[in-house]
Image (cartoon, rainbow, N blue to C red):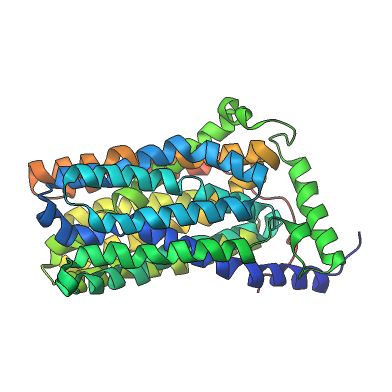
Length: 434
């Protein structure tokens, strides 16, 4: 069908305004519940008698069940629809997140983290798959950037909020870290029921699109999907035999060393570096993620505008690894913090571009849902192994320098792989997002 640039821009702008802020809110809450253990640890470790290695084990166990249930969860989402399945995920993880407030032993911590991973499995790849069914490829990196900005905002908002909740220590006889878990778990349960009411399963369920808009959008996404190198007709099991999917998985695993290895330990690293109060440390920990929001948007927007993926994928991750290693040897507290800030921001900057590259390669249907979940699951192997390793290094050496050296080296390798992995997007721009 023939459309004008104004028509396409209006359509993309409408779905952006109707879906993206709500999806950002959902992901902000998800990431907050997953990562708030990093701030809770400032009090919880002493209360539960956790060493750095035990804390790392507890943080990492989340990813064991998250990985195991990732692919099945996303395949179910593709079959039953996003609305019902995302609502189910949110209600169950919210209840488990609240339950974290009532643990009393290390083993209970381990068990609840396993349950949290099981409950939340499939949420992130489910939303990524959902976005890919709404946005043409030439607008997809920016759409993904808004979604992942929510994860960074979860740290910008959540770290100071979590630090403030620690100050509720003793209220009604509850420790501050227990209030942190409970208060931050409730919104997921509430929003789960909102999802059932608000979120359309697909383009044809969106009553707020005109028939012409719905027809154009569905046809555009379907045509791009049909041209994708990975076939649409294949079942989800094909993801396990596709070499490009495994290369994408490897890249995302290497990148995850930064988002997981640094993020989960950043408050404790900065506590040792600065010696400031828990609340000040939470503020310092939030600033790198504010920069990440800016860099994700700018990198993805420039990538879409230039129809270029390789440099936008490889360069930021390579620079992130170099800066992370430099932060170990600079020998000045302020300079070290500045380098850590840049390293975290650049590591996150590639996220929307990566998922644009991935969804441009994959067709729709169960094959795409399974592949996206597989890629995300493989990346979260870093969450299983890296936190215990970082904790072990801290217990043995008294610091995190060798852990950061490991992470920096892996990010450099990931950046080099990114140059070889991405292909430039050939499609012309479809519409300007607002």
